[in-house]
Each structure stands twice: as C-alpha cells, then as structure tokens.
Image (cartoon, rainbow, N blue to C red):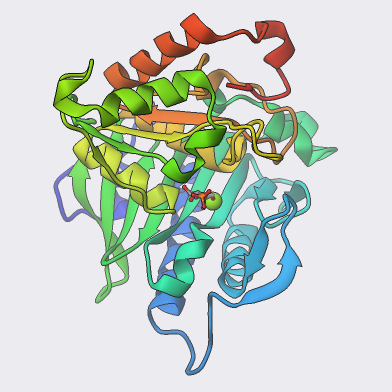
Length: 346
Ligand code: F6P
Ligand code: MG
C-alpha cells in the first residue's frame, strides 16, 4: 500500500476472508475514531480544565486514576459499543463486560497509557488488543480473556505526541499511520517496520535497581560498564514513563525495554498488565522481527491467570532479549511449574 493511503483503504485491502476483514476493520476504525477524539481533548482541553488531576479513586488494579483516564475510558468504550465488539476489558473496568452480545471480536484496552505524563505534557497513548470472541464468551465475557496473546488478530497503540500516530499489526507486519488533522484520516507513513539490530540503547526505570533480581541487574550493570565492560560498547538510556513512547522508539531505533519483576510489594510480577499492555506490544514486536519475553517465556505464550494479571516485560532487539534470556536460564531458581498461571516471577 502506498504511503499516504488512509487506514480505511489499507484495512479493506488486507487479505482476510471478507466477513472477518469487515468485522476487524469496523473495530479498528472505531478505535481510530476514539483516538481522533481523544487527541483533540488532549490538545485543546476546556479552559481551566486539568486533565491530569487525580480523581480520588483507584482503578481495578490499585492505580490512582486521573481525569483523563476516565475521559479516555468513556470515549473508547462508547466508540466500540456500536462496532461489533462482544467481550470488553479495560484497565479502568473492574472486570470484563459485554458490549454487544452478537459481537464476534473481543477487545482488551488500556485507554490511557502513561498517565503520569499527562500533567507534564509528555507523550501518552492508547494500547489495544483484538481477539476472537469464542462462542462460550456469550455467557461469560471473561472466557475471551483467558486466551494467550498468540490468539490476537490485531493489536497496536495510538501515541499522542508531537503527532498522533497509530502503530498497527493485523498479523502481517507492522504499519505506522499519522493523523492528518485537516481531514481526520490516519495516513500510512511507514509499512513493514523492522526493529534495527545493534541499537545500544535500553529503557528501564533504573531507580528500582536495588529491587531487581540478579539476571536484570547483571544485564544493566554490564551495559553501564560501556566500552570497557563485557559488552564492549557504550550504551544509552531512555525512560519516558509511558510504554507507548518507549515502544515506538524501540521499533524505530532498536534496543530494549524492560519492566522486570522486583522485590517491592505488588511488583512480584512486574508492573505491566498482560492482556492490554504486554501482549499487544509483544505482538507488534514479534511482527517487527524482535522478541518479547517475561524473562523465560515469550509473552505471547503466557496464559492469563486473571483479567488484570501482570507480567514482567522485556522486549526489543531479539539479540538483546536473548542475552537476558540466557541470564535468566543461568540464575533462575524458580521451578517452572510454580510460575505458570501466577505470572512469571523473574
Ligand atoms: O501503564 C503503566 C506505565 O505507565 C507504563 O506506560 C510505563 O512504562 C510505566 O507504567 C512507568 O512506570 P514507573 O512509574 O514505575 O516508571
Ligand atoms: Mg498503561
């Protein structure tokens, strides 16, 4: 598809079966409509309105909610309501809901990723995962969210930065679109994204170093030793505090992103949520030639233990991910069977 083509054009040109392609296109276009609306709210909030204000409630997983988290949830849910989505799971909902009992697709979504960046005018985003809705999910929508990430039909994220961008995979590579504000269309700016190899750059919240386990500490310490250390190269570090922004950089420039498990209470399985943060980014990463693991296993093979389950996350350049994987194999003391369905504890 030529650059400048609209999202609608490219979706309809995908080689899926007709009914399946139409259902998928409807959902992705609904998400694009929500992102367009959200981008407008973010860029031009009402006078005196503080979108980063804490609203005094916590979401389902104990995170402090901001005004924009709630606005984003409302916009995304309403946009998807008429788009053929059955089971729906959001970071902001207590558990899975059914939007349309006849819907053939399920959506797991983080409506507003990187909330702590709102008040500092930093990059924020919306992450989504689209799964098939099994017949049995009609009686219980949670069934749709017991599938591993391998079942994803499409996944991606919108990024609200200097430009609003969409990074999308429907299982045939990764494409990037930019919002053309004049027409309201998302237009293709890059197709067939491949993660460059050899990028000596990593993203981690290094203030947590004292809580990390040995495999992660060793990897980062080796990077910090630079050209004089075992890696023989000077590494750079970047941390946006918003996974979408870091993921976009990794897809563009290579390197690695890590949010490992650590010894803090509540971080035993890392911070990021499997279904609507880790899995969609892992799908994009693999489609761009990279790798995404929890330390030991591919993120896409981890069965969710519950809708809001967390997982340690390491993704990016496959060679760098492999170094961390080897570190874990050497030092892991956790029996594999004990880790499954509880989320890995690396
Ligand atoms: O959604 C979780 C998230 O905001 C990610 O976007 C980001 O990478 C991470 O949390 C930041 O966590 P911390 O504040 O612990 O560095
Ligand atoms: Mg998030």
